Image: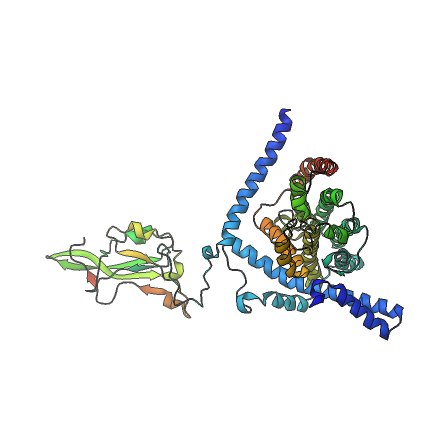
Length: 158
Length: 361
């Protein structure tokens, strides 16, 4: 008797789970607004990349052409592929020589967009931008210098 | 416009016109050619429309857009695919059995043509009205498996052979359930003739008139017929993931297109049988003796009703395919022999009892 009850129970639970699945796909079928496909080249003007997309590393500059990078090389150490190269210089601050950023070299062709450099930065100088059109005709263009020419460190950042 | 509601006016006019010009023997041959060309055209159009529909339905269910580039909303995509398939090189591998290899796609298509001949499309639009229509369709629709077995065997490829064997086991098993679920309704109609079955649903479709057992039979028919057409979640014969493409691994070009077309043609046929037996075929939706309502429903031509119902059945099958995970071969056979078949047999007894007591509408 128990096996017969179990037999029918199994059928009803099976049908119930099938209906649950059908409801999920039926919901998607009746709600075409939930389609996530982007028709990329056509909607290039209106396409808004979502916030957490990791496209490339940028060094933030404020309106006075100042950045927050101290040239500490923490990002260079954190990078698993050797994408970032920090070249520093020594500057005079109050009569003593202090390490500072000379050139922030970023090799985009080696970057896997893992984002490990962002939390490694002690002064939050770099962020991930959500640009994604990186194709160029010459691979030398992929090696970028991130600090603007003539930029200097913000006051009070050590 | 009278012919739109009763196609026998049109067919009789054609027959009369031909009889005046030709001898009786020539008339028969000409009419057969006309019917054959009509079915070929129907299959070609069905292939185009259903492949597009399948891709769009699956896309929306998976939150995608599907084909969008060729033509407005991708409507010309299947035409482009057909051109691509026609231009492809037909390959035959070295050790294949060339005769059987070339024969297999035609066997499948012939089985599909034989089955569709007995379907009533609208009032008076019916190629052959057998008095044993359901038996004929049940017999003929299982012929397609011979084509699949031939394709698998002649390819001289272990994956093709495994796929073909699975397909054989599957169709032999599920054929029983399809036939038994149709028999459940035959208990009520008392006739195997498809035109009589359609006429008997003038005051309500069997799925409503036969209430509980008819609905169980409809459910079993849906499951078993999906399995019979080798469609997902029962697409073990193709099994892209473990058997590359099963029985049609070695096929390319036009012969592959035949297999592809046969799958969609079989889907249409199975949906057509289901719509005819359970949902009233071309019969409009009638409720008992509500004269006004029935008159409004009669205004819609029968052929629209038939294709609407078939479209609904096909949508159900597509919904199943893109929702459910695939079964393993042992689960497939368990489902048939331990669940569907016993339930089906009990259901027939229940339906016979209901019919005897007059508890149906």
